[in-house]
Image 1 (cartoon, helix red, strand yellow):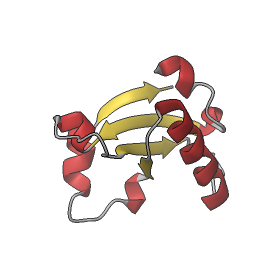
Image 2: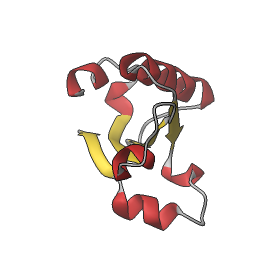
Image 3: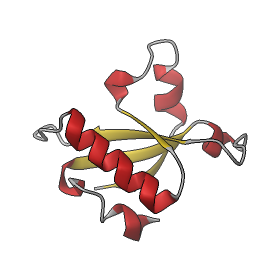
Image 4: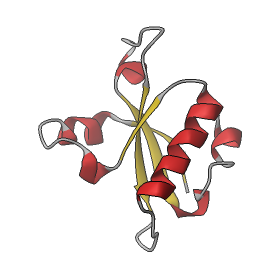
Length: 92
């Protein structure tokens, strides 16, 4: 999957991309989306439209709906659990 990820728009701004949720813990169904946590370089200027382009590119590469979240967009109720259990799939 790394070769595909390197083709994602704004890849130079992405510090880390991590998998969490049902695909990580083995509970994914055939119709499950892929939960990804994206972290950007501190100097990155990524807004809503850029994030949407990244999400669409990942969906195209992975062939599934992607739920793309940043650490700040995670619910405070499960943020710590996600951050401690996610699996890094791309890192600069």
